[in-house]
Length: 68
Image (tube, rainbow, N blue to C red; front, top):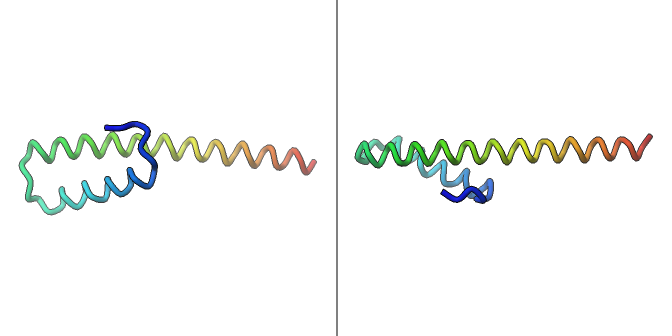
């Protein structure tokens, strides 16, 4: 799994994984691989969201300093 996957691409892949798992038409081994991939994607998205949040907070702080 690529760690540099873009947020939207990761979310699309997660949606695909959920769809596959919900259909319950795949072998258990494949389901486990998809589940593991999904967890990796979730961690990746969470890290990216935290980074975005920190960037927004930093930008807001810089902006507020400029208004002072």
